Structure formats: C-alpha cells, structure tokens
Image (cartoon, rainbow, N blue to C red; front, side, top):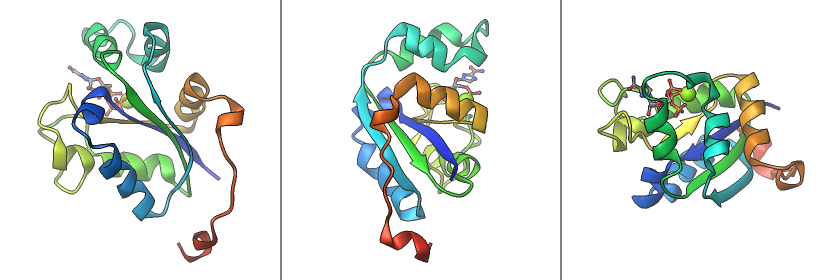
Length: 147
Ligand code: RTP
Ligand code: MG
C-alpha cells in the first residue's frame, strides 16, 4: 500500500490547525501510520528540501520550516500521494482552490500550512528523514474494506 509524508508546517501548528488537517485525511479514508510533533534541525530541513537547494527561496524556506514545531505524519492508502496533494491544493496562495487546505486557510505562498510528498521517491526519502521503522505502525482497520 502506498505511503506519503505529510507535515503541518510551523504556521499550521501556531494557528491550531493540526486537528482540522488530520480530520480531512481521516475522513477521506486514509490511514494514519505514524505521527509526532518535531522541532526540526537545520540539517534535517536541508535534507527535506534538498530539491530546492540553490534556489533563491531556499534560505527563507529552511528558516521558516525550522522556526517552530511541525507535526510530521505518515499516511497510507491507494493513491495517497497524488490525492493528498490534491487535497492540499496548489503551492501559490492565489491559485489554491477553495475546498483545498491551502485554498481554505492560506493567504500567503510562504505560509502555506502543509507539506506533502510529490512522488514515491520523495515520500520514501522524506519518511526516512523523520521516522524510524519502529515508529511506523502497521495495523488493520475494520472500516478499510468499506472505503
Ligand atoms: P511543499 O514541498 O512545502 O509541500 O510545497 P509544494 O510542493 O507545493 O511546493 P515546492 O515547489 O516544493 O516548494 C516548497 C515551498 O517553497 C515555497 N516556495 N516559494 N517562488 C517562490 O518564492 C517559492 N516557490 C516555492 C513554498 O512555501 C512551497 O511550499
Ligand atoms: Mg514540494
């Protein structure tokens, strides 16, 4: 089953939106397999956003993502990588559609509340950057067969 890495960014934690964001993925029918509040290090942030190394916004991004605790999560489900990205909405605050997390809550591209992996390769790398194998819990949910 597909896994993805989702992370409520420092702005989402500060605004008290963890519960609301988790609720959306639970209600969609995805399964939570790992979660924790983390104050990430600069090294961990640089690894997380390594594809943006060298871009003009890289420094701002690393400073922001290390500015306060984040809520790191691993979710499981069919098509969870693409579907969670659709639920998150576009990167640009001006383009994120109402109904998406960013479209409903974010007015700034730099303060866009949540990160989601963009490919299976990114998901694998990002999960390994935040979670040990023991922190990911495999369990059966009775409701799964109904979704
Ligand atoms: P994320 O990785 O955080 O989930 O966001 P994303 O996939 O939607 O966007 P990405 O292209 O990976 O960019 C990472 C974050 O960098 C900021 N950004 N600023 N041109 C800019 O000023 C610019 N482009 C991207 C955004 O905050 C974005 O979430
Ligand atoms: Mg990205």
